[in-house]
Length: 184
Image 1 (cartoon, helix red, strand yellow):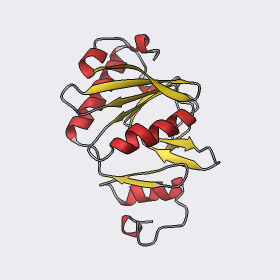
Image 2 (spheres, rainbow, N blue to C red; image 1 turned 90 degrees about the vertical axis):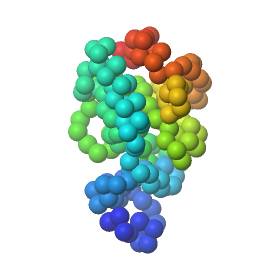
Image 3 (cartoon, helix red, strand yellow; image 1 turned 180 degrees about the horizontal axis):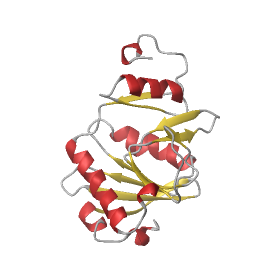
Image 4 (tube, one colour; image 1 turned 180 degrees about the vertical axis):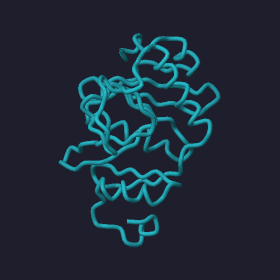
């Protein structure tokens, strides 16, 4: 399926294979699908977005978390409550062990997903993905605003729902250690 087919010749159900084909044909957008089949098409992240992800990745690496357990913008399979499977591409993922190569990795070993909010993605990042990641059992979900302080809101999973554990500027996070956030 090519990028031109999006919207014109859309299959009734978009699969992860369809998403992979769309991404291969269109390097100017990111494609995700919810477990219920809702397609999201986003432009690639901007410079500030990329710098925030790089700073967090550098912080994790400097603390000794192996590079094989950290990835930026990799696809993960999101199981749905009704049996469907979606695909999301978090801005940063931390696993508890190295993963096998693949386009859509399982969520089983994910410790943390980070979403950096871009203009227009607020609702998907703070509501939709929050619910999907909680239902998938991902222990931590961090949201980073692109405000002046680059505010990080850290959510932890409790009883199937996320609760905000802390909200602080990115500079403060970078002055802590991942161990303080149960990311070792």
